[in-house]
Amino acid sequence: MAKLILSMDGLVLKEIPLVKERMTVGRKAHNDIQIDNMAISGEHAAVVTILSDSFLEDLNSTNGTLVNGQPVKKHFLKDGDVIELGKYKMKYLAAPAVSGDASDYSGTMGVASIPGPGLAHGVDVLATSQAASNVVPPPGPPAAAIRLLSGSNAGHQLQLTKTLTTLGKPGQVAVIARRPHGYFLTHAEGAAFPVLNGRVVDAQAQRLEDHDLIEMAGVKMEFFLKN
Image (cartoon, rainbow, N blue to C red; front, side, top):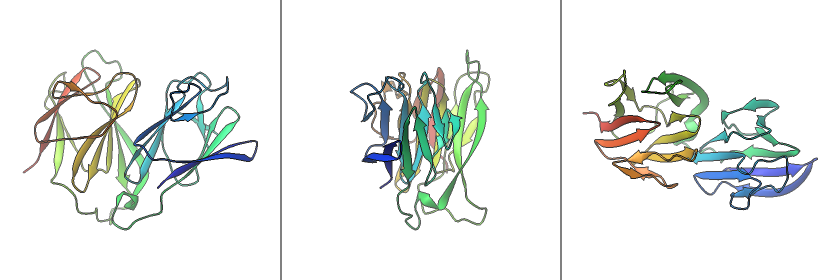
């Protein structure tokens, strides 16, 4: 299991196992990781963990979030990365590698944009890429894709070939995880949750079935299995 080591001025304060798919960090008491310091926003950042992969989201914090000294909004966490929030630091320690799981993939990330109606920046699609072209993906579910149903790009398809695919825009982000036993949709960031078949998705991962309808950031899309 991956974990965070919280410290300040070199003094280790706490070891935090990443036991939930989404863990928030902030000053307010309802956060999974509470840091009671005025330099920390009420809801400062979130760490989303799917299988063996974790990524960090800054939740529009006032003072920002750094990873290894660089400001970030979204960051795929690698073993040994140091997250900085004010005077506090959290070192990310990845889960031990297990042959044949998502750890066979690197944290390299590619971004494409699928424009949506009324969206200035479209719907961002963020996905992990394989570590090398000769890496053989572990056995998994049937091939699947997302088809856009609304907007000028209606009919466009996004192939779900990566371990993680992130959909959304700042303020509303969700993750589709490709697991050995299926595809799962999880809310990652923002007050607005995705809608699945007319029902709002909560913080728990929801398994996707053939022809499920998803609505994200005003864009309607269909999940379907490929023959």
